[in-house]
Length: 223
Ligand code: SAH
Image (cartoon, rainbow, N blue to C red; front, side):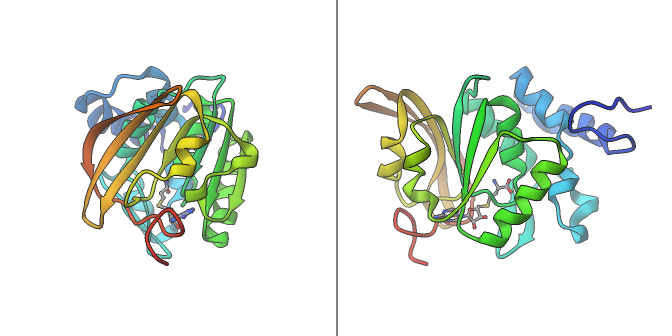
């Protein structure tokens, strides 16, 4: 019998999640126990459209409609581990998409604000996040490249769409010792970047080559 805990349902795909965590995350060096626990308990199948259900725990990104994707589990966990989210943190996510990454962040943080430009995606994500018993999220619709100034500053910012360069508004909305993880670059040639703010200084570290959908809007690519 499968344990019933927060975000877990009897008869859900806990066994598949456990295998995913071992074979896709731990085996590739991910170690943060809180991140691994979130990945082990959040039902990814809730966030995947019906035609792709069988692939919910596959080792790749999936198309989810509106030309958008749900990121590969490894990338979700990797970005989350590098972000270093602590339980007292106030977090901004840009690009809600399905809401899966949102739910993972919300498990680790005190509060999450997430911005999505497509209202229908935001609405669907809100319902799914509630379904996995996550309640500490504010859903906004709009151009997330501009951040969410009235809700900031943020201890941590994660961007899940690729910008041509680091959006200035997001840097400004980080706390003094804040961190941000985001993909930067052109279509098909992007790197994941970690930004660490130390007062007025912003240190950047390149992490990994990645491929994300483009960030559109004022700080992104033309719509
Ligand atoms: N983290 C998501 C994947 C998001 S895909 C998940 O786990 O499912 C990237 C998302 O960014 C898409 O939903 C896209 O509509 C959104 N997006 C692109 N440009 C944006 C912008 N300027 N502001 C807010 N969202 C944006």
